[in-house]
Image (tube, rainbow, N blue to C red; front, side, top):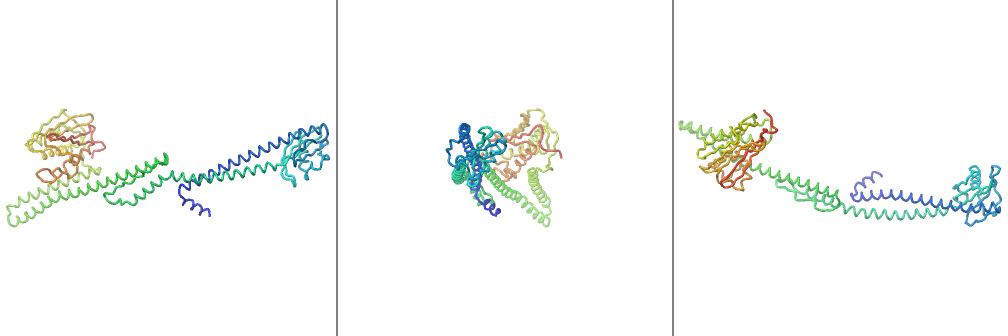
Amino acid sequence: MIRRLRRAYRRLRLGTRLALGLGALALVVFAVVGTALTTSMRDYLSHQLDTQLGLAQVAQSKSIAQNGTLQGKKYYRWYYAVYDVKDGTAVLRTPEEAADLPGDIAPLTSLARAQSAADTEVLRTAHLAGEGEYRLRACEVEPGVVLVSAAPTDAIGDTVRRLVGVQVVAFGLALLALVVFGRRMLRRGLNPLSDMAHTAHGIASHDLTESAARLPLRADERGGGPEVEELRTAFNTMLEHIDDSLAVRAEAEQRLRRFVADASHELRTPLMSVRGYADLFQYAAANAPEERARHLARLRAEAARMGVLLDDLLLLARLDAAEPATPLRLREADLVDLAGEAAAAFRASRPEHPLTFAPRPAALTLRMDPHRIRQVLDNLLANAAVHTPAGTRVTVEVAREGDAAVVRIADEGPGIPAADRDRVFDRFYRVDKARSRDRGGSGLGLPVADALAGAHGGTIGLSSAPGATVFTLSLPLQGATGLTDP
């Protein structure tokens, strides 16, 4: 039975359970308050009755001492008994009226003996057979004479019972009102929680397996107090985080699709070239032996080109995964010397682009992988040459700014369109949408440079306008943070 009640209670809504709990607590409070009020009222009425008994006995004692008779017997159902206790025993005197004594005088006699032994007035509540509860009071009228008075406590009992009845009705109505109206108020206060539950159910109905899935739902209902507001804020923050994560996932999936498509496109061309030159080499071997060497050289060139592309892809993958075997050989090296070597190689391979090398410090030593930083500089210089017409001036500047070593590679070309600036570091992305080989490479030069700079704890910034495009390589002077020597 108790288990069944517990299961039924657990199935109730939170507002109902809280209202019932509040009602149970109020019931305990009402019981404590009612008990205190009832006890206080009973004690008060008992004290009043004792006072009346005392006042009556004062007048009666004087009457007995002066006249030998009782006077002032005004109260209905009050009893009086006079005892002689001179020899240590309580001897009842003959009453003036038969109605002065109850049918059961044993409690009165016992109180008279107790008073003679205590030598002071004695109060006691006793049950008189056939009469009910009585309050007894004994006092010494004169030496050897004791007066015992008895007053009924029926009025006290009636008053207390009436008080208890009023309390039960009043507290019952108050408890009922508290549960009913408290449940309504709690349900209104918990409406925001219901709104959150409906929002959660709405989220459950969304298909989050789709790549473009988003969570537009939010718990918007206001009210409920600071705690509910805090819960709503946390709930909406969680939804924002999930929504942002879904957006990142969708973007990652989109980038992966674009990466696979671009990689397939870039690899297809050299693979087809390799296949074509292999067929030509086979044909030349049978029909034109003098052409074999030329076809074999072209075959090797296409294979080398595909190898470079695959090496770049592997390097990017290893840098993205932050593998312990990341190919960095860290040592102390002079960045000014590296920039000078890159500038000299650029002048030799790109004579159509005049280059100015402007190192501010004579030397700038920091901990880095010279081979990889040289690769970054070569990629940035090659990008400046490929995307600008012949005769465009290129400038290389090395400087120290605060705690960073900075290399700026600027050109005076047409600049990068604003729509393409945010994507020039994306893999396989090229401003030349036609992907023509006469302008640009595979679209991995800048991504590789950016990844290598990040592996050294640095960054590559871009600012571009017609006539002024600047790539800024920034490296920390303390070296690549978080990296260890292999």
